[in-house]
Length: 178
Image 1 (cartoon, helix red, strand yellow):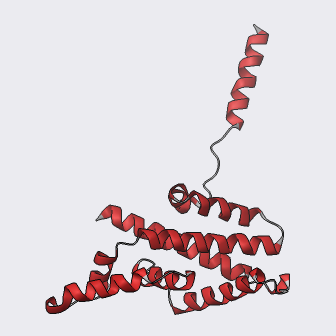
Image 2: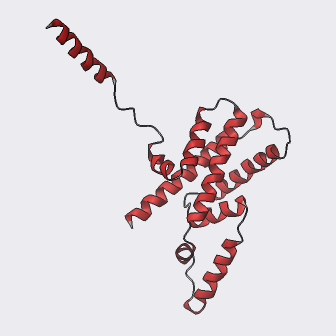
Image 3: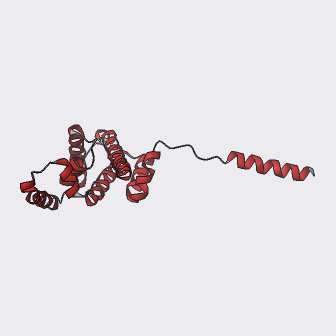
């Protein structure tokens, strides 16, 4: 009888200790991480990484992958219609013109701008400048230049990555509500 009571008590304590994990500060982004697993993977690597260079490169990968992924998902005709009220007399030609410009967007900076204009409503001029600064340093690293680890703009890269993820989360929520 005492043995049964002790084992029951042990199991009770055991299951009492297994709690639901606390809500992460990243909770709003979990849906996005599921839809973009690489973004979530590299973001988690960046957060855990101690080496400043690796952390910076992981964060830049988050920005890069997220930008390319968002660019692929853009619905240009409807986004451009919302952005520009085109006169009926030239609406078709103007839409074709914008779509041609979009197709020419091959590099990361151009795609970042398109996403900033059409999808990421919270991204402002200062964020675009931060992106350019972070990208310049990433380019220097990729071209073999020496960059001091202390000068790496890790905070800028992390803030920008989180902002882009949050913008997409907001855009996804808005699309679901409409």
